[in-house]
Amino acid sequence: MKALVGTLRRICSERDGRLGLLFSVVVVLFALVGPLVSPSPNAIDVKARFEPPSVTHLFGTDNIGRDLMARTSAGTRYALVLAVTIVLISSIVGSLIGISAGVLGGWYDRAVTAIFDIINAFPPLILAFALIALYGTGPVTFILLITVVFIPQFGRMARARAQALRSQSFIEAERLLAVHPVTIALRHFLPNVAGPVIVLASMNLPVVITFEASLSFLGFGVQPPKSSLGTLIKDGFVSINQSWWPTVSAAIVLAIATLGATLLGEALRRVIDPKTTGVR
Amino acid sequence: MSRSPGAIARFVASRLASVLLTLFGATVLLFLMVRLVPGDFASVMLGPRATPALRAQIVHEMGLDRNVVEQLWLFVSRAVTGNFGQDVISHRPILDIVLEVIPNTLALAFSALALALVAGIPLGVVAALRPGSWIDTILALLSISFITTPTLVVSIILFLIFAIGLHWLPVAGAGDAGSPLDQLRHLILPSIAMALGWVGYISRLVRASLLDTLTELHVRTLRAYGVSELRIVGIFALKLALVPVVSILGIGLGDLIGSSVVVEIIFARPGIGSLIFNSIAQRNYPVVQAAVIFIVAFYIIANLVVDLINAMLDPRIGKSLTARDG
Image 1 (tube, rainbow over the protein chains, first blue to last red):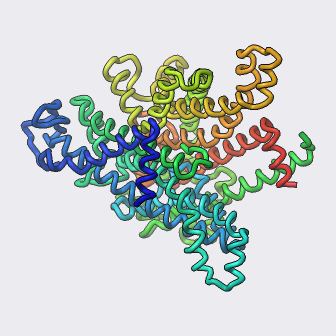
Image 2 (cartoon, helix red, strand yellow; image 1 turned 180 degrees about the horizontal axis):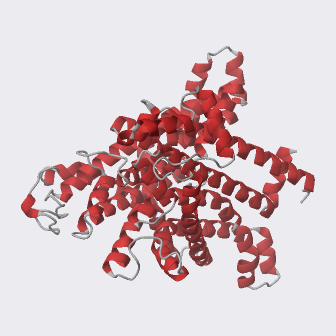
Image 3 (cartoon, each protein chain N blue to C red; image 1 turned 90 degrees about the vertical axis):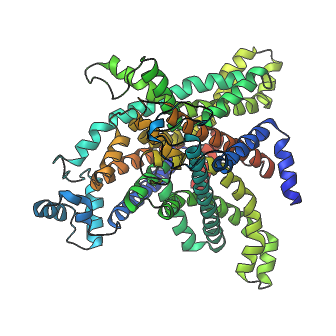
């Protein structure tokens, strides 16, 4: 708890960190509070099609008169849940694979590295797109497939840290004392890898949010009746000649979400792991 | 700089070998991905189009009547020679279909990259010359918003403002094949949409590495000798500061090609991205496979070229690589 407060204080001590925190909090609040202040996201009011923003509909309405603020809020919530789940799973699985490869070495390490290399040979968005198009679009499938694309990043980093740690004398000592390898991994490797993994995870969050939006925009992500920011942008784009507001409101929320998450991630990196350089 | 031609050749050879291995692995992965789709492959692919004759053609062409290892061998050995079979929908060689659209995507990706460099480097230099000033602050905020705004959002906003709102630039397509000027006009919006994030990224990178370089000893020596600041920055420091920029160009090209799917769909441009999109929608998996293999090969080769350029540019990298290698 104390560490958390300390980290927050240090994030707030610089401009980018403050901005990132502010935008992120605004987006999360928007995702949570939306349903309270706005009618149901699926309530149809055909008479009120394509209405511009007004007091009753703060974001206006879409092609069948649904309230866009409620829909964008629900879409933001769904996009955030998906992105956080994907980042959580891929960081945990990736770290475990990476640590085990770094600790065990040998053919297992070589196989894992080769698989990571092969996955990394694909431009990430193209791989995600192909996987989802081939294997389906349900929420669980979606999460698992995107996870595959992001695991190697975490795996490579955890592996490099684990390798550096393996030859340290205190690890050697525990090994000589016949401490079980799993105990060593849990007691020393996991805590040492945790910092950089948290940083990488937070920096990947905006990337995953963008991925989800892009794939849903292409029609291969979230499926109706569920909506995410990507599907809202897509639905709005289809009827862009009648009204540009639906697409733009969702696009702006998406841009604020990625801006906030990126700034916050970079601030977190400077606090937790100042030695590593920023990644895009 | 003790880099003998032999060491360089060994370095190139070992990188080339690993590139070929990765490409082979990616081809196998792609084969498995498509073949592991649940259900009878020929029916999955043909869907409502399935006639006995078409089925027989697919089974024969892709060797579906043989075991998986033989199928894999057939796929890889054909892919190496550029033979991806015949498209069941248009009855044309798949290679022709892919080669036809690739120039459009390459034109898009390279013009976006050029744009990112032309705009990003000067912005980075300006910011680095006055660190902490108001112009540095504005550029910092600008570049971070460029970086974080998804290509999807940038494309839509540009599309709305310049194509639909102001009617300055064309809405869709790649332009008249016979008219380079028309093609250029069609290239402007999509390439800006793709480049914007990289403008921000490159300017930040140039700023950071230029600031680093400007505090190095040899720059201080130059200053002590009374060399003008313009010469120091423009000739000595910038050259070193650009090394990290070169090293991210490989990732940059891959990223740009990846985002071509979104950009080409929004601007309705023919290209490898929209080819993949349309082929997936039609479940035309052999075309998807061929197109993705081309993208992967391009991505890997771009990274290899960048690695080699980098090794040549920065004596430190070259040395460590050849040392590790030889």
